Length: 100
Image (tube, rainbow, N blue to C red; front, side, top):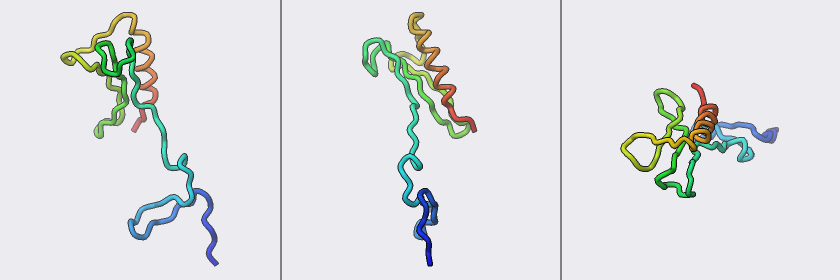
């Protein structure tokens, strides 16, 4: 007599040949991560004074932190009053990077 699978058991999907969770809750399958934070003075996501700090995954080197501003020529402009928040945000995102 066959037994019923327990919550979270894994079986092989015959058609696709992949492991499939049986009766698993979404929290067992999906993960929510904050991978981008925006620092802005005027509330705009693309304003002149907006800075984006995000975790990126480069296949060759694992995750790292990328800091960008929507305007300019590739240079990063940091106002002295912005620095404490920017530094704290960068440190937070570096800690959240996954190591290979």
